[in-house]
Image (cartoon, rainbow, N blue to C red; front, top):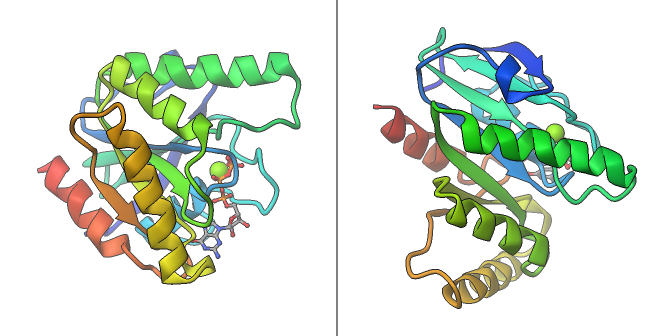
Length: 196
Ligand code: GTP
Ligand code: MG
C-alpha cells in the first residue's frame, strides 16, 4: 500500500541522485508512453509527476519518496523523442544509461510499452541492452483503456513472440491503464513483494 508519496529531487546526473540505501524502481519507455501518468496513478496523487500530451515532458531523473522514504520511484525521460537535436538526444541517453548502470539501489526497471501498437524495435533494442547489462526489468503495457481488449492482446502476444526469438526466459508483463486503473493493484502488489 502506498500511504504517502512526495517529490524529492530532479537530477541531471546519477551522481546528483539522493544518497539512500532503500530499494528504488524506475519507469522508462518511449516518450509519451505514459510513465509519469503511471507514477501518478500508482501513488494516487494527480500531478505528482508532470505529464503532458506532448512528448518530451520529463527531462530529468526525478526521485519520489514512498511511505516516508521506505522505498523510491523514479520517473525518467523517455527515449525516441525525435523533435530535439541529436546532441540533446545523446545527452538524455547518457544521463539515463549511466543512471541505469550505476545506481546501486535500483531494484528493478519497468519498461513501458504502448498496448495500442505492435512491438517497436526501439523497445526491443532497449530491453536487449538491459539484458546485456544485467539490469532487471519487467514490462508494463500502457493505455489499455484506449483500444479493444483483442487489440491489446494481439499486440502483447506479438511482443512476446518477438522476445522469444532472443530471450530464454521472459520478464513479467503487466497490462495497465492509468485512466481506468486496470492492472494497477497487481503492479503495486508486485512492487511491494520486491520491497519486502
Ligand atoms: P515523457 O515524459 O514526455 O517521456 O512522457 P511520459 O511517458 O511520461 O507520458 P505522460 O505520462 O506524460 O503521458 C503522455 C500522454 O498520454 C498524456 O496526455 C496522458 O494523459 C496520456 N496517458 C498516459 N497514460 C494513459 C492511459 O493509461 N490512458 C490514456 N487514455 N491516456 C494516458
Ligand atoms: Mg514523463
